Amino acid sequence: MGMLKKMSKNTRSNLITYGIVIAAFLIMQTLITTGSISSLLEGLMVPLCIYVILAVSLNLVVGILGELSLGHAGFMCVGAFTSAFFSKCMRDVITSSLLRFFLALLIGIAVAAVFGLIIGIPVLRLKGDYLAIVTLAFGEIIKNLVNVLFIGRDSNGFHFSTKDVMDLNMEPDGTVLVNGPQGITGTPKDSTFLIGVILILITLFIVTNLINSRDGRAIMAIRDNRIAAESIGINVTKYKLMAFTISAALAGAAGVLYAHNLSTLTATTNNFGYNMSITILVFVVLGGIGNIRGSIIAAVILTLLPELLRGLSDYRMLIYAIVLIIMMLFNWAPKAIEWREKYFSFGKRKKEAVK
Amino acid sequence: MAALLDVKNLGISFGGLRAVNAFNISVEKEELYGLIGPNGAGKTTVFNLLTGVYKPDSGKVLLDGEDITGKKTIDISKAGIARTFQNIRLFKQLSVLDNVKVGLHNKHHYSTIEGILRLPRYRSVEKEMDEKAMDLLKVFELEQVAQQLASNLPYGQQRKLEIARALATEPKLLLLDEPAAGMNPNETGELMDMIRFVREQFHMTVLLIEHDMKLVSGICEKLTVLNFGEVLSQGDTGTVLNDPQVITAYLGE
Image: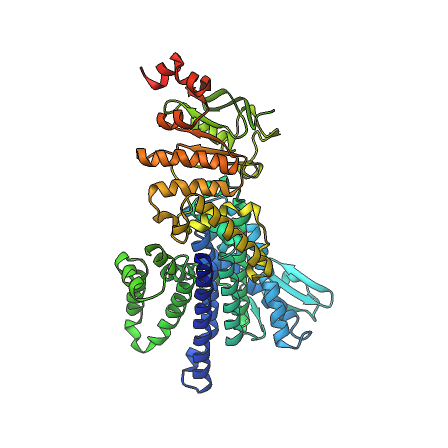
C-alpha cells in the first residue's frame, strides 16, 4: 500500500541518517584510538558535534518553519552559561562527572527553551527580513548581558552585580563564579566525543520525528501558506512558538556541550555573537534549507576543511571559498539537482515529485 | 427549522468605503446556495467576514444557532466553517496526502511527546488519519497522486484537493470561492457533479461564489446577488436570474 511505503520511506531515510552519524563516529573513534590523526583534529571532534547540533536545530526554524532567525548563537550562549554556572557550583557536590553533566544539560536546555519562548512571543509576530534583524539583535543582547554579569558566592550565599567584582561586596572567603567579560573559569571538562554524538542522535531523533508528526505537518503548513493553515483551524502562534522553542532548546544543548569542552567560557562575537549565528546559517543554507542530512554534511565539511587544509597555508581560504560555491551549486542549481536525483537518493522529496 | 447559516445586517468599511452593507443571508441545511455579482461587489469580502479574516463592524453571524460574529479564524474553523480560496492556497511543499492530513488536524489528537517518541497512540492515530485522508482522496479521484507534492498537480486537481482539505475539517458549512475559475467547460461539468456528490455524500451545506452562470444555474437552488456591497436580489435561482434589476446590473440584456 502507498501509505505503508511512504511511512517506511521516512523511517528508512531517518535510519540512513542515524547510520551515517554512527558510522562516522566509529571511524573517527578508531582513528583516534590508533593514533592515526593529529591531536588538533582530535580536538575538533566535540566542536564538530556542536556545529552539527546547531545546524540541525536551526534548520527546524529556517527550513521547516520557514522563518529566518539570526539569533541562534544567543540561545547557545544561554545554554552554555547556565550549565557552566551550575557545573562550577556543583563541582565539589556532585563528583560523578556523568551525572553532573546530565543535570547541567537538562538545566541548559530548559533555560534556553524558556529564553526561546520569551523571545519568540514578541519576535514571531514579525516576518522575513524584520524577523531576521530582531533575532540578530536579541542574540547580541544576550551576549552583551552575559558580559556585564558578575556573580559571586561566599558564606552568606550568592551575590549579583552588573558593575564589577568589587560591587559584589563579598566576604573575604567568597569566590567569583561569573566574572563579567572574563566569563566562567574552571568549568569541569565533561564533554566527550561520545556524548556529543549521542546528543546529535537525540537531536536528529527529535527533529525528524517532529517533522513527520501531526505537529510537524502543522508547522510546515504554516510555512507553505499561513492563511490556508489558519482557515483550517491551525493555531499559527502556537506552532511557530513550538518550532522556535524546540530549536532554541537544542541550541542550548549545543551550548552545554561547548561550555564543558573548555576550561574558560567567555562570550565573544566569534563564539556567541552574530559571527556564529551566520556560520550556522551558512551550514543550513549550503546543506539545503529543510534538508536535515544536508545540514549535517555541510557542518562537518565546513568545520573540518580549514583544519585539513592547514598545510596549504595561504591557499586555505581560497579553497574554502571554492568549496562553498561548489556546495551551493550542488544543492541549488537545477541541472545539478537533476543529475543528483538520477544518481543519488538524496533529496527524496523532490524525487517523489518527479515520479 | 432554523437556518444553518443566518447572517443579519452584516457590514464592514475599509476607510471611507462601505465594502459590505446590511448583508443578510439565510442558508438552510444541505442547501446549495450561490453568491453572485459583478467584480468588486464584495463577495469575497463576505467570505472573509464569515471566516473571521475580517471583523465585521456591524451585524451578526449565526452558525447552527451559535453566535460566531467577530470570532477568530481558528475558532470559526472549529465551529464548522471551511473554505477554499479564489487563488488556490495549498501547502505546496507537502504531499497531497499530507495536505488532507493537515485538514484532519483538529479532529485527531496526540501530544507532541507522543509524536516525537512514536508511542502507540501516535501509530494508531496516524493510521486512522491516513485511512480517513485516503478515503477523502478517493472521493476526489486523487488517490493515485497521494504521494506527489501538491504543487505538481494540474490545476483542476489542485482545486479538488483544496475542497478535499476543507472537507477534512468536517465542517457544517463549506464555502467555495470561485471553484470553477480557470476550468474548461468539461472540467466545470465534472466539478458540478462533484459538488452535488459532496452535498449528498457528506450532507454538506454549500455556499459558493461563482461567475460561471452555467454552473450557478445548474446546481444552485438559491441565489443572492451582490452589487456595490449591497444585496440586489435574493431568492430561488429561477426567480433571481429573471429579476430585471439583476439582468441590468450583472447578467446583461
